[in-house]
Image 1 (cartoon, helix red, strand yellow):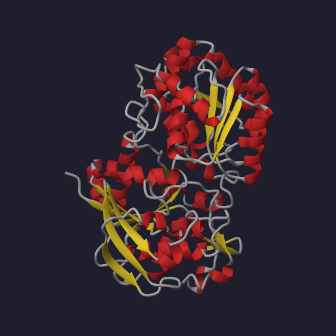
Image 2: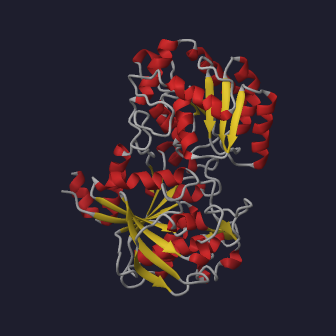
Image 3: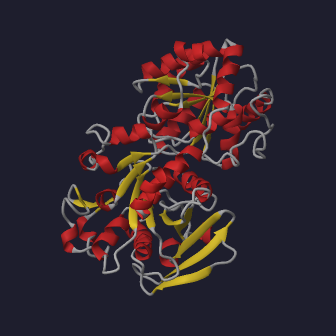
Length: 493
């Protein structure tokens, strides 16, 4: 029997309570898989308005008389398979908009304090100051929780502290703020140094977490390699190289109960690996929803993504003449940079019935894209892991990916050797340029004209294990090692 390890996951969003991207899916789907490994995850999340309205019963376990400008409470709850501690701080979280943006799409001006509060609450538990919950490990996710290990470092008392892990889900988002906030954020003067929270003259939330956490993880082995370089490190590569012995890449997984085409209530027709034909029904439904000509025989390439430079949306727009020249259709679902949104809408106007889009995102349409598109385009310039290609594999949509980060780790290119061995699951291209994307699009069109080979690739993808099973074991090993190094060695012997 495995020894129980208590882990506090400090995270700014958690599916199904609040979601803006893949972080919420990861944080919400991993905990159930870890229970079988003897790891008990409790997630600390902000009490946004949309979170508080979804909680039926809670138990107050702690009160902060003044947490960055107002009173706050820690409230414990269990919802389904998820154990929660919610930071109920109305002055920070009870408002319209998204977790990070105002209704007008601008950053909340008090974001540094909103997420410092989340970190401070996590640190209080990690330091044993909350009698009702004392975790063995505090696991902070992304910049919004980055101050957690720093607060624990600077406030550590005689009782010591829990072990800490910092996970980078996307190094591009670092949480950088003015140095004048050091005191208001509750950090001591000596924290403003290269071996503290200082980052290019300001305060770096993510940098702080990477500096002080006992261990660092990121969401794929390839991305762990990339971010420890000058080119991929985005200003933090030197720090990560110095800590390479504490850095580990562990692939993301998905919740196969939520993402299962044989039971998915959000799609037009259910199907599985042995009965793929109903995908055509989903395809026509998708074409109708995004404004494409309804033609089940046309090759349909889909993108469901943030519409940003990182995701390579501009490359797809530049490659449209060639892609459409193969007879394919292209469907965009997502939102992001306003200029990129306008460019996508302009493409719809320029190619009516052949390019379609829905600006915005909802869960139902995201599922329908996976179930109806023939192939999913992921031409990211960098990609920590990506979940879209994992959903695509599960739903028989062939992923077409740039060979970067987790895309490289999760998709097997259909090259000649892979065909001979019968193991290919998608198409990779590199470097992420318009020319190489165009080459990949031509490969997709060629495969589409070979139905038997196309079906074989689909089935290869659909039989791929994209769950958390393997990665949950790696996380469990890491947690046990940090909670009790001697025990971890004994279990591994």
